[in-house]
Length: 490
Image (cartoon, rainbow, N blue to C red; front, side, top):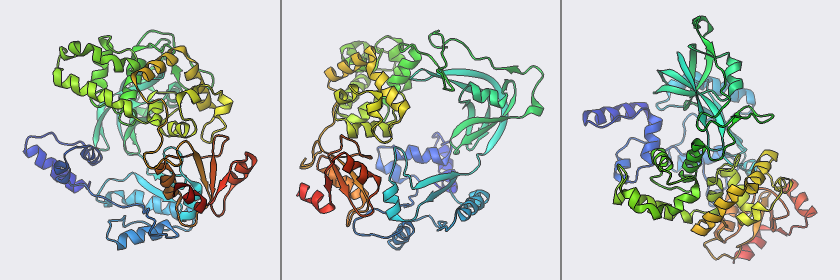
């Protein structure tokens, strides 16, 4: 959304007595979440194409693909450039940091990409991003304000994070009154004291953080921060695990953790339970109606009580209970993510679901067996193993299974000829791109894993295959050409 269009839209909304938006980024994100296409069509949002994937076009480079998109009439970034050296990349980034305000919309950096499509496919993609592209950010824009206090925030896995309480200050399009301080080491590194004048920036122009102290403005009564030794939510003594930067509350029944776990479980990328936001979770936990995620699937027993709550009623209660019922159909990988296992984000959950077809397959493994999977390191393996070893977690899983939540992977919805089979792709295939081959396998019920392990059934091999081929041969995993793969689904 261009800044000029954003200002005009806000002016119209103000004239009509409607609430104005804070900044173009939030306005755009909010618009895309709206259910009514007529309202979306009335908002001044723009689209810019940044990649082309189609079996009908096989350009050798990403840059050529963008040229093709432009010829086809798609809007493409006008300021793109093919750089031959890293020095050219750095010079391009520095130029646009100086010129960032000359672009009609807000930007916070550039994206550097490997140009060769063949190299992109060989590099592949990890949980949250491609290995062949990286954001090169501009320096954050900051402002000065006073640190009035430091609060402790307890996360869903017990991590206790210090948060700066600030005199409100306008930074990067929004008013900021709280900002992350990461951990106690960070506070000591900055020599941060209560009453200090601090510099507040937005990381990536989004997340507020305290990045420095203005020492010449330090008042004589400024006090050093002393870390509490007990959890602010439940009073349990805090512990700092060896080798970690953060303190942890180890009481799994801590109300702050309970709320955090339920909010995480219900979020859009997990079980997607609409209507179960922070305020509703807080209300349900405070009333003792929900003490863990399994309790959500027994809320229907309390319908009458829910309908009698302030700001509730029959319709609100039905909507929430219906959303909880629908969540039972979420796929296995999203359920894994929703469980809130430490170090297991959405990407890692998908990797685990690719290799293990059910919770039962996963819970029986030891940490060293989990580390056989690419992308699963010691910390993740230990965390997953510890989660399933916990009696409380096993009981939660038993109740989720009894409620009908999916704790096994589902076969594909198409012919299902590859159902139950796990494939790995390596090298450049004759006619299919890596993404096209992946879609073909998944459409026929198969799973595409990112790395070779003993649980892989087939390795699909193209030209210039690398280390995956050697590992597959050592494990005696059958090899397929593209044509042999196609024969399996015909």
